[in-house]
Image (cartoon, rainbow, N blue to C red; front, side):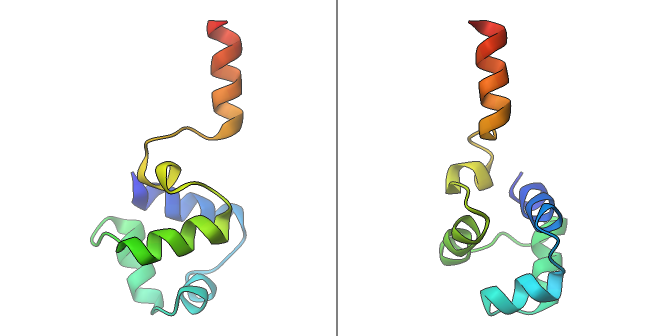
Length: 78
């Protein structure tokens, strides 16, 4: 799940892998590994990603739906 979220957030924010890797102090290849699910980012990188994209670490890890989806789900149920 985290691999999909990283890629989705990067693309939504119109960032290249190079730009994101520069922000995180990594190589573009490492971003590629994360997005392809070949590596899992360590906790310090997850925290930096959450801060950069203004999302929770739970969201990045797949334990939370985006706020807009959450609200529409609540309307359907409520």
